[in-house]
Image (tube, rainbow over all chains, first blue to last red; front, side, top):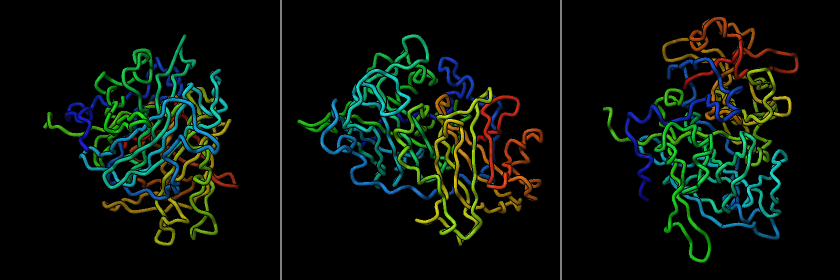
Length: 240
Length: 183
């Protein structure tokens, strides 16, 4: 499988590849972003590069979000989301835990704090997990999530997205991010997306439609490759 | 080589307010080891996360990681060295774990026992790392990482014993902002 060429950058690009902690247009950062400079820990004193153990067992149906509720299937456009997990040296990250969660097709989360007056789907929970294979590949089956309103500012809407949590071989490869869908008209208005330093960085969180992943008479395929830090690379604080 | 092509880590995005959809069913992850499975002393650690005005952050996810105290408690199916717990209405989460080991760095520095902590939350576009040490530990004075922290801020990294266990507060901002580490 060819690597999505949007993940290939130059050394110089590393330094503007992450969002800042404080980004006032995203209001929740104002009282939550640490204000003091972070303290750099020399690698010799950091035990975060050691392996992390203790992932939970993954069930056979955990990667198919359309078949988690007995008695029916969720409403919405069925999708396949697949890609590769690589480190910054281009090596596949094997046996990494990938967890996803998302709103339903109407843009509603199965969550007590979601007040959006859109219908819940009795056949959709919206959470899945899987482990990457020997090539770093992962694959989920789900339904396309809907956009939804939030109260960050007047008439604020989040573009459709799937939350991703990635746990590789050590804490340094930990990553929580969001995957978006191509050509969403809400991108220019979304503070999460706009918190990223430039359009090329934003592009990296947008999945691509992939006819090769698409299954005839069944589901559209979206490709989303993810890169996690290498073991000895620049801390995220220095990439914002 | 400034223009060498390489892969660059994907950008981080916030975990958002609905993280529980993904993680709520995993309550077992707040237990790293129990008295029945571990040989070193059990440790109950409560962590509270507070925002810049001291209000509890009730939608954070806290993950911890620590070194096992030795071969006896090496990670296995019964003992994990990583845990995860969402905060409650009052910003608290709690872990049942084991007393971490102190260690010696390659240069001979004595490293005080500590637990690594990673915080995710709505309003955090990237996760942040801190660590908690334990009050009364004689090794604190020589710990090389605490030594990098201005003396007036070291207290923000020290958990207190309350008889039933240890408590540690993480203040994201303010006069007594917790020290976060760039790793």
